[in-house]
Every structure is written in C-alpha cells, then in structure tokens.
Image (cartoon, rainbow, N blue to C red; front, side, top):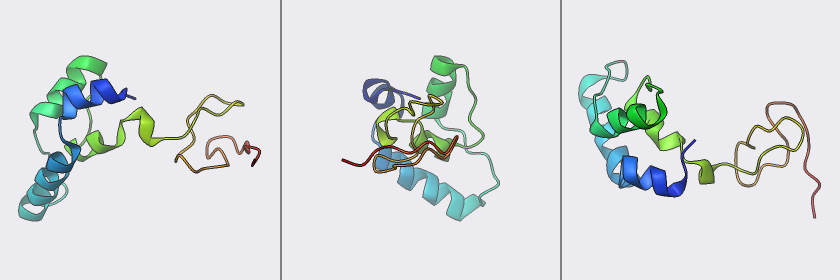
Amino acid sequence: MLTDEEYREIVGDPAALYFQVKRFISRHGERTEMKHPAADRYRERTGVALHHTFWLLHVRRSDYGPDCPACGKPYRTLRATLCAECGHGLELK
C-alpha cells in the first residue's frame, strides 16, 4: 500500500489514469496487458509487478479503513465495521 504522497508521485492524477485504462480496455479488450509508466514506477518502488495497470487505482492506503486490531489487515472500506479477513468487528460509537 502506498501513502498519499507516494501515490501522487507514482500515479499522478488517478482520474486521468482511470480514463486511459477504460479507453484502452474498450479498444483492446480486458485481457490485453496495458503498459503504463505509472505501473513501471510502482514496480520500481515496491518490487511488485501488477497484473494490470488498472490495479494502480487500488493501492492507496487512505482508501481503506483502519488496521484490524485482531489480525492487522486493513478494513476493506473507511465505513467497514467487520474485518473481511478474520471477522473481527469494530465497536460502533
């Protein structure tokens, strides 16, 4: 997962990347691998090669909830109250 600052450095404008990827998929199909400089920067920074450039839209840490106190994995959304990994629930206030 990337911090917001790292994400801006690697991806730039996520909306622009989203539309570039959608346009590429509509022209070439979903199964065609899209090469994008942002994916190369991500691989250089993290050592992880993404299967598809579209996954760059899902690596920003602030898009997910807090870490689960039981297993340490992030909650899937900011509003989640149940950990999808281990089932631990957050107390509602």
